[in-house]
Length: 222
Image 1 (cartoon, rainbow, N blue to C red):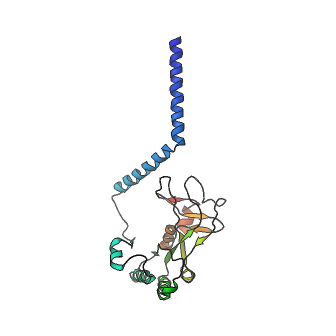
Image 2: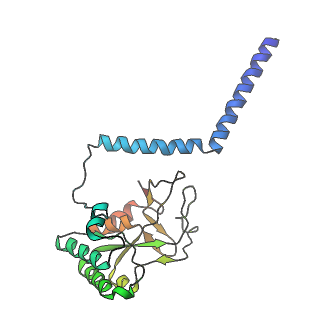
Image 3: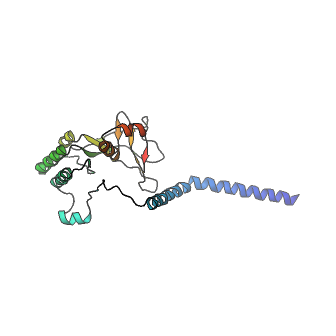
């Protein structure tokens, strides 16, 4: 009888210990961190299984070390940005996404600013970024209408803004380990705001139909 009671107590102690261990690991975020790690490996596996097929219609024009050596240190004159836009327009780019913030005009380089304005005007289908002044973090729902508080929007400078018909926000969501794995595509406060990527897709398709039919407020893309 005593031996049976001892076994029951032993199993009770083991059960309670396991339960406490699980509670502690959840509280410390162990499983969340494990999930983030497995997401990385799942993306790598998806990439390897897909056969590494890239869409050659998408071209990235980047600022790398080679271009810095050739064109000089950053920041560059906006004249150079204008030339890139003009070259892409001449090459037949269907949509141009400029992922640089030009929030202020430069009184010392008014001619360069004007070149950027003219290049934007000629490009027609061009998307510029904006920055929403809001707090974004996973685990909180900042993209729901009731929770969204936007104090300020950083836009292109006034003269450029007049020619920039297409704007998309470039705010990012950081996971708890400090990495970016997904972005919100669309959110609504008093107004509707779409991400930089979503606006580029809309301009490429020349239609809101896909986004309106397939995206909901707060949807994320990996």
